[in-house]
Image (cartoon, rainbow over all chains, first blue to last red; front, side, top):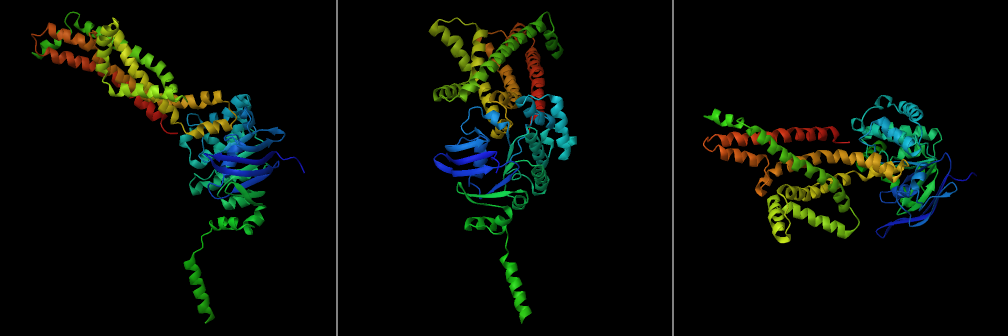
Length: 262
Length: 225
């Protein structure tokens, strides 16, 4: 088996003395899409933030290929290889869409404008936003902003892309336009770690599902088996919370069946 | 009758005297605004410093400025310091000193407010693009801070301009003082007071109104993200 792109080894993280990550280990291989789910406060977002160096781990190691990146000083060099998109579509409000896209490649990677601009246009076109290149972010809908944020991250050609609940702040009708872009990326072979509450999306996009609970990975498996037959009781309960069983309807059905029998 | 009053305004060099007084007003205001902006940025940084002592120092300064009437401060510096320390400060210098003491603290507080109102995620998503700290400051934080700060800084400037009217109390011959001299000189014409004060009012208005319009326009143009 090939060496993993990312190797997380037994990391711990506490905020103000209360443990958020209590020993998490995880390997991500090239082209793999790992979806992390779990109740809020389970540490899934913190895990992504630690990988990107936005939070410092208290203990444990994170390796990007053969480089130890946890506790590194020059984190900005690592972040050029690990993209991240957040929940609150953080486009830079004082810059046009195109300038948002060019900033990273031109300033961090020092690429010439013309080359990046052509590529940016092409990617905007692919996510259906070519005509918004010169628009200011405040004129865009939430779904459009988040698609731009994805393009902005992709233009850095990251080795790994981290998505932290990128549809959590969106109106329901805009969720799929964003998630379709992510599924596209997965099909192009992008390596991703995704935190989400969209279970059907998780099932569709994941190669592997991690279920986190109270700072540890409580269960992990292929999406097909995980979503149909979770092994742990906690995962079962968590998945249950996404279904809405109506006891009233069930009672009516039973009644109808009874009548049918009689 | 009223024609007489208004004609006195343009009699001899009266109007030029008023304009000269206005220039003194503006000179004090402009120098004060310049000093307040430069020192205010430092003051704002100091307010966000890690040192408790520095933050406490700023806090006390800001409170003094907010609670102490400017006129009292002017008297304190112009009359008080002269007696106590034997400083013989000119009125205009005292005025610039006092107004800058005030403007620096207010400008600093505005700067701090503008900088801290930028959502944490702006910094983080810029960091996620692999930008260095310096690049994040330059391309993301500074431009957004400037946009938030500028309308408020302009409003503060108009307040500073208005407040300069107080300096006549410490014997600076600015526009209001000149006006009163003219009124005194032509006291036989009762309507002259109205016309002189109306003119001074109009002068302040014509200076502050466009500035305030500009602030309003910048605010709508740059508001929201």
